[in-house]
Image 1 (cartoon, rainbow, N blue to C red):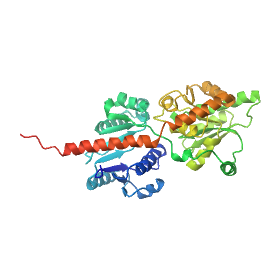
Image 2 (image 1 turned 120 degrees about the vertical axis):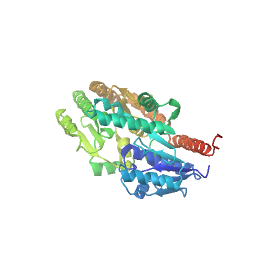
Image 3 (image 1 turned 180 degrees about the vertical axis):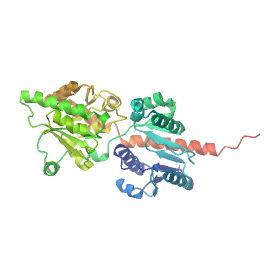
Image 4 (image 1 turned 180 degrees about the horizontal axis):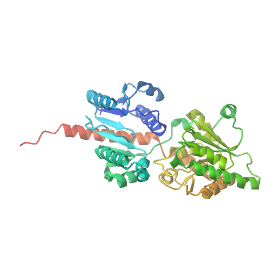
Length: 392
C-alpha cells in the first residue's frame, strides 16, 4: 500500500524503556518496508540515536515541549498538514482530542494505575485514570507488550480483548554481538576496576524494582558463603539510575554491612552493559511488577544464569530458562542465588535454555505484526472515508 502515511511519535526516544522500543521498531521498519511513507515526529537530533534510514522515512521537527498546550497544538497541526493515515503513539499518555487520523498505541505496563488507590491525591489519580481510559478506548488498536499487560488493560479499563494485540518486545541487536573478548575484559578492569566475580542488576532504581530486598538477599548470601569459605570476593554491581532520589539504598547497604561489596555504577552505554552481562555470575532481577522485562532476556542472550520474580509478566518472558522466586521473600532470593552460584550442572542448563528463550523474541517478528496492524487500520479508515453518504 505505497500511498499510506504512518506517523510515529519519537519525542520520548531518550527515555529508558520507551526509547529502546521506539529505536528498534523504527530501525526494523526501515529494514522491512521500503514502500510505506513514515513520518517521525519529534526533535531531529533524536534520529541520530536510530542511525541511517531509507528514503521513505522523514523527520517532522517539533520545537515545543511535549507536555504543553503549544506542544499539543503543534503535534495535531503536523498530523493534519501531512494527511497521515495512522499515528503510532509508542507509550501511554494523554493524546489530544480530535486527532485528524486514527491512532494505535503501545502500552508497556499498567503500574501507575495498579498502585493509584494507595496514593494520596485521590482527585488527580481519578482524573488520570479517566483520561487514560478515554485514550485507550479511542485507539483503533492497542499493542500490549505481554499477555499479562493485555489482561491488566482488560481488567482495569474494560477494553474489549479484540481491540488489544499482544506484540512482544525483543532485545536490542547490539546484545547479540557475541561474548566478551579479552579487550572487553581489559576495558572493564581498566575503566571500572572490576577484577572480581560479581552478581549483576541492570534497570531502573525505583520502589517496584525491589532493589532493597535484593541487597538484603545479597548480604545474607555473603554471610552464608563466608561460613563455607566460598566466593569471598563476590560483589553485587548495580547498573541503572543514579542514587540521588533513592537514599534508602545507601542506608540499606550500610545497615546490611555490605558497603564494601555493593557498587552502584549508574548509567552505562549498551556497548559496555553487554560486557557486564557477559561477565556476571548471575543476573538478578527481583522486580515486583513488569509489563515485559527486557533485562533478563538481555542477560540470557549472553548465557548468563538468571534469578527473577515469579510475578507479573516475568514467568511469561523467561519461561523455563530462569530460577523464579517470590520477590517479597529475601531468604528465598538468597537461597536461589546460592544454588545457582554453586550448582554447576544447573548453571549449564540455564545457560542453554537462556539462549533458546532469548531467541524466541525478535524485533522482526514483532514489527511484521505491527506493520500488519498499521495496514489494517489504514485500510479500514480509507474504506470508511470512501463510503457514500446514506440516502435520506
